[in-house]
Length: 430
Image 1 (cartoon, rainbow, N blue to C red):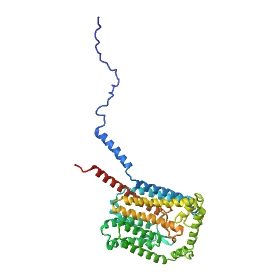
Image 2 (image 1 turned 45 degrees about the horizontal axis):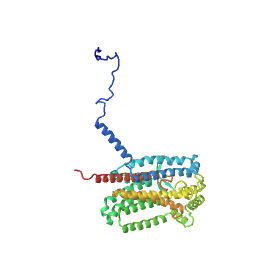
Image 3 (image 1 turned 180 degrees about the vertical axis):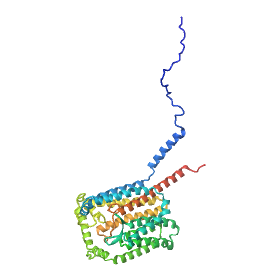
Image 4 (image 1 turned 45 degrees about the vertical axis):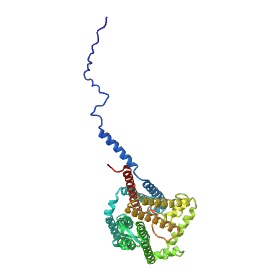
């Protein structure tokens, strides 16, 4: 006898029980195909943005940041004694330099994101504004004279050097103008007409303040921009002779400068007796450092023996505290900086970027050469700081902005080369 078949019974839900959800998501809860593609595209673009910078970009950025940090350490070491004597605070000059550095860093990164077209449209305004500030120094009570040079502008508690702004605007202006006239630079009239009245006038404004060192750096960067723009060598030779003759006339027109030249040849300066003292104590600092130095912070020359120990003669303190090894490291840093500049010039196809980068290279490397040559006694004393290392707020900010401009060129030239390679590999479109 077989049992009757079972009849399936319907399960009844308990009152108030939650309905069971299916394990598979509904079609409405699934992300759409467009949303998934959009998220994937965003991740790909973010990855490309993280790796889109060139090796030249990271090299220049790394060297710059290392030099800035190294300079802050040396400013603290070389200025602590004088800062305590002046302000009863060992860290006053260090905090001041650090504040200017904190202003320069974001400006450098901001400028590195600015496209080239911005400078081509606005550089005349920036150069005119910088020259106007220099006129305020020369013609108004806002100008301040320090060390025989009237080259500072004081507004309230802030003191700045408009000549640094002129240098920064001038290198970009030279790049814009010479790039536009690149096809006619073999004619001397097209070289002289924009350069002599505009660039020469900007240099003359700085020279009227008595700052021969900054004037020489500006003349050097103008000649460097002309050389990399492709101007004929005979025109450049004429410019070199003219600048040299003018420098001799200006040097002999001041008793203070004549005294510096006399001290360079072993004499004494009646107008500025500290020059001979400064040169000798700079030699003593370098000699006492030896190969390995006396140790960071253990300099004897900074105890009111060496004038301008944290600015113009900071290289002597580096040689004393860190020895020959530290001095050679500083030299190698500037050599590496020059090599990176040359790599960026070689990689760029835009004449504006090439000329501007070359002018900035001549400015920073040439100024470093002059500063170190003064400390070593190779040339007479000229008051120019060591870029990115010496104390000086305006000089630090202008140098970092200039490097930010070169960083923007490195970014854009790398992107242009990548776009060209991708276009070439893709082939002609149907």
